[in-house]
Amino acid sequence: MLAETGLTEVAKGVFELRLPIPFEDGLVNVFLFADGEEADLLDCGMNSDESVATIRAAIAHIGAKRLRRLVVTHIHPDHYGAAGSLAGEGMADLYIHRLEVPLVNPRYVELEHLVKEVHRYLLVNGVPASEAEVLSNSQRALSQLVKTAEASVQLDGAELLQMGRRQLRVEWTPGHSPGHICLYDRQDGLLFAGDHMLPELSPNIGLHPQSTPDPLHEYLDGLRRMAALEPELILPSHGRPFTGAPARVKVLEAHHRRRLEQAVEIVGRGKQTAWEVALELWGPRSNFYEKRLALQEALAHLQALAVEDRVTKSVTPDSVRWTPA
Ligand SMILES: [Zn+2]
Ligand SMILES: [Zn+2]
Image 1 (cartoon, protein in one colour):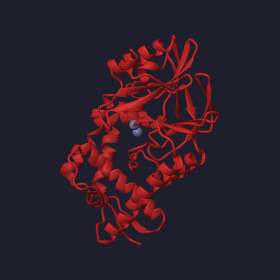
Image 2 (tube, protein in one colour):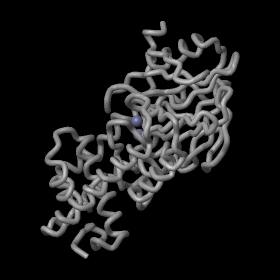
Image 3 (cartoon, helix red, strand yellow):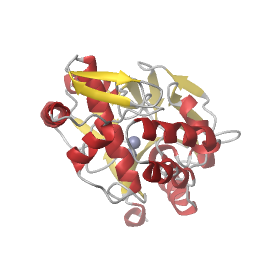
């Protein structure tokens, strides 16, 4: 059973459970916090019978009878997908940052409006019409992995939450998603980092219809705040637990600084749309999902450059253009 679920006690009373997902590195880490007959859960994997059964088995395995609260770092399918199977009427209470709440319905329930909005966003950013049609529909597949639930508590950030027998502080870290949160256990220096700080991957930071207006600056600011906590151990949602937050943050900052310089150079060569810039930065990508992420990421960097007044952003109803400042 232990081997089957990959259930590991990563700190006293905190259990890491690795659940299968159909993208990224194929696994998402969720965390169970024990408190006698009750348990609390941070993130819940995507919604599938197998994944939910694994969570239920893990709850029973640590000796709990009931899931008390489910806290979600952000509403991406690998973190929020099974929320509707675990939280709601007669089940656990769902805690989520308030900036994530309005993203749920358009993304997973009433998709038509967002699909249209994304289609338009793709066209104004230079995506050819034939590709925009396919790319704007790529969201539909993801919505199959999600069963939504209503939030019982909407977080602002800076709340102290009881998880198991621990007190964790909510750290609002926008960028990867507008209401992304980390949880910090000050007593033992444990940082539950979600997708904000990963040991190997640089999380996708994108400008798109559901993002905040300047996600890259927000993201970098959040990284520096988390590094300043000097956590003893970082428990990420993908990859293995790691140490050395300040060093990891330096690497991530350098990565984005390099991308910013490349984007300035590409715009300087006369590439005016974010789509052209994305193609230069990442090359033609075969996978539709990856293409969209590349466009979003290029836009986040261009927007940061415009905010810094290093490129000029010009908009009309039909186009967004980036030129040297
Ligand atoms: Zn994510
Ligand atoms: Zn993730």
